[in-house]
Length: 267
Image 1 (cartoon, rainbow, N blue to C red):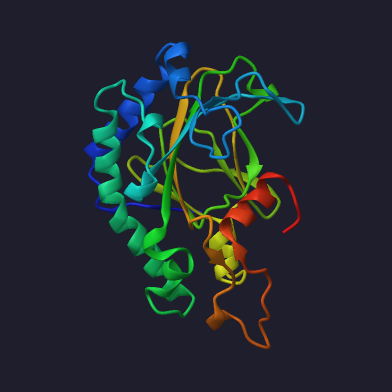
Image 2: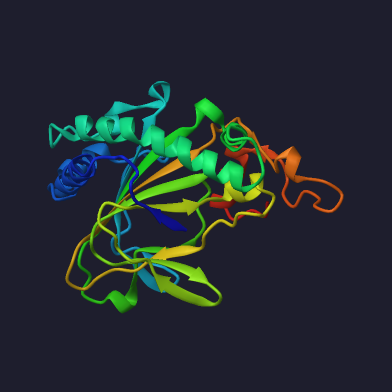
């Protein structure tokens, strides 16, 4: 996990993304439910809540909204809030600026492995990469010691690009300790996800992280998960596998990987 500044996304674009997301979550519950994930849907798109749900003896304390923001062929606008009216424009403007960040990240990570600049992105889905936006909304919690925002996990994405608000809550695990991820205004928090760990044959590690909640303040975050299409196969990059470094991961379709992870089936 690391943070990037000078990413060329204007501060106002990030501020607009945050403003419309915050506005949506402050609407009455029945209005948010209009965007609820349909019962029995195999997609995770839509509004949902874990407020008051029990997880590992702690109460879940988060509302969320998922919807795809790229590619256009995968977008389902019925999950994009119409209130506030500027919601769609703010999200499309952010996405437009995100493409350059995505390309630079993949190039840098690719070069770090000794690969050609384009090879890591191609191995993760190339131009078919899906940008899945999630908004996490953690209201003030009277007993933060008894609640969890999001339990400890690694992301199943290739890379996650996250915009936080100023309220502390994100923690990363390293060397047996949980560390607070310091808030840097207008920085983007980058998570290495499972697919980059697989592609790099373990050279880059998916970051183990969790979210805590605050007694007095509302925390909101906007991660975008960069994921391969469901039918796209991901495995260790052939250039990173040899006799000294055998493949540490199986090659499989992303959809199958996601199903196994969500249902806690060994990979």
